[in-house]
Amino acid sequence: MHKKAPHIIISGGGTGGHVFPALAIANALQRINPQIRILFVGAKGKMEMRKVPDAGYHIIGLPVAGIQRRLTWKNLLVPFKLIRSLVKSKRIIKHFQPDAVVGVGGYASGPVLRVASRRGIPVLLQEQNSYAGITNRMLAHRAAKICVAYEGMDKYFPGDKIELTGNPVREALIPQANKKQQAMEHFDLSPQIKTILVLGGSQGARSINESIMRHLHDFEKRQVQMIWQCGGNYHEQAVKAMASFSLPNIRLVDFIDRMDLAYAAADLIISRAGAGTISELALVKKPVILVPSPNVAEDHQTKNARSLADRNAALLVPDEEAPYVLVQKAFGIIDHDQQAEALARHIGEIAKPDSAHKIAQETLKLIKS
Image 1 (cartoon, helix red, strand yellow):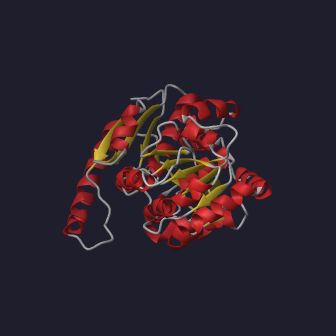
Image 2 (cartoon, one colour; image 1 turned 90 degrees about the horizontal axis):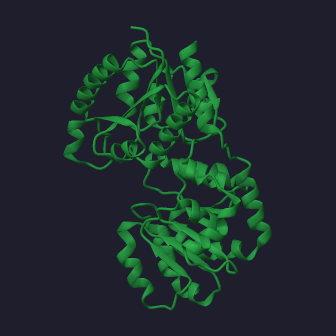
Image 3 (cartoon, helix red, strand yellow; image 1 turned 180 degrees about the horizontal axis):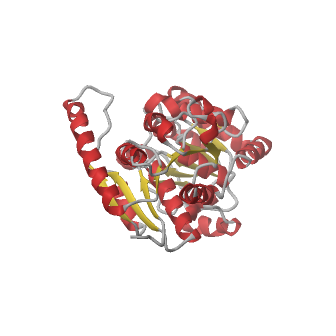
């Protein structure tokens, strides 16, 4: 049977940092050739199993699971789940007959990429972080091409396979200059007052949220607005903390569904330092304070943040220092236009807006060759 249109599997996920780039690559492939057939393979129970169908793509879930860093009986099941996932991956590949497989990281990509490479199907890896993840490091020797977002990744991967493409981001977030007024109306804010956007993560980032709660009295005294996305786990606590103060300029939410408008409203952004988030922030071109999460593999968020701080493209505040210095540093940037402009300019220089298109092209090149 001769297939007219290429069949491509995109595999991986677990977090938004893996899922959103995967969807951006799929959309870019479809723009290049609407006939391309795309199948996603993810991990059962993870967010990709919801987000991918919502975006209009078909996904199959594997029973694969990662090893948990705390001592738990669930780790005993990991090898059995891996074997079942490898068996299922063989069936998926036999049935779908992909011409190429794209791995976006996360342990769900391991079994499919392993099976594909053994069958001689070209494999492309996409590594989002400045510190390569364990799945991608293990699969690198099997990959035909490795697309990265940071310079100097040849310490993890063979140099001749590396392509510097940047990280794909959610298309809806690519900034539009005319959104500022719409953003101010959406959040009911004043265009005359500077706005801080605090991103506490979908679950909630403890140190960032505690930093804000500890310094609410400072916000009461200052003419500054804040959109505070505290995450579901901290919403109740934050509402209680705010009740003791008069804070008409703070918009507290557990989740932001219009991130494009939140970014447009902001004069300064406080955030964790996940790779996908950093790529979005570079496109937004606003001054940023990064508070890396300490609860991630190999402390890769600190490495991501350090690579920006070294170029004066962001301010880095270590997690343990945040409750004491974060808010004052934020006010410092809000008060000094020159510093804010320099940070915004430098982070904008690392933006790669056509990253998803580049990765899509690299994937199609592998099929042709």
